[in-house]
Length: 230
Image 1: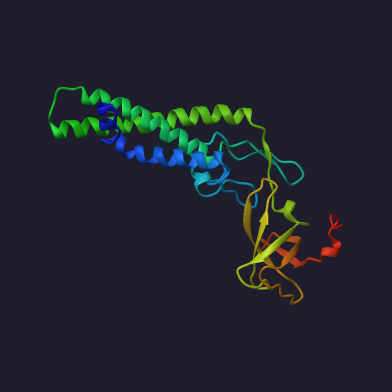
Image 2: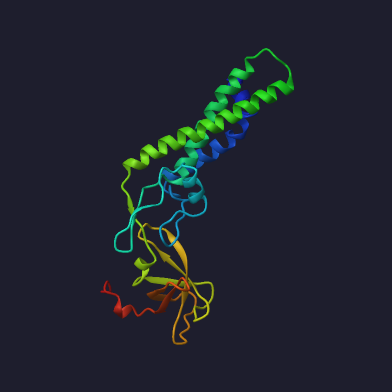
């Protein structure tokens, strides 16, 4: 037990031990329903990965890529492994490899601090490479088993409703929030016409996408026109 704890809180394993603890707490919260597995995933109006999701996709850590086909203005995207799953796997692999390397290093009969630090740096490098390789391979294999998902092209958003955010929406400025078919909440630029002004928090109907300005034209939404209204 002493060797285990000593290695877990020694360089380089100590870099991953806190992350492993955070990952364990996160998945406990997922199990009890306090959060979800797509907490760190992000997509834009076209269903393309953004932020951390885009970075990890380019690194091959989510197993998915961009649009694989386009039909009728829309398209399909290869399924991606959730960012939280990929990050957790990376942390687990890195921690395990660094732990094994640290134990092997500790068995060497040497008291040279520079040598131990150098060996620790080598173990750290091996752990990071192993974490990337294992996560990339498993994510790619799992993604092939997941069904592809329909993307939300900008044209597909026309005819849907959104909620005005960040001040009023006018002919010169407007930001709105909309939920895509994939369940992601995204922010879009909107504009009104004919001098109409929509206050923040109001519901608007998207009736056109202005390709030149890359903005959505909206108007006040009349609940009486909602086909799903009782």
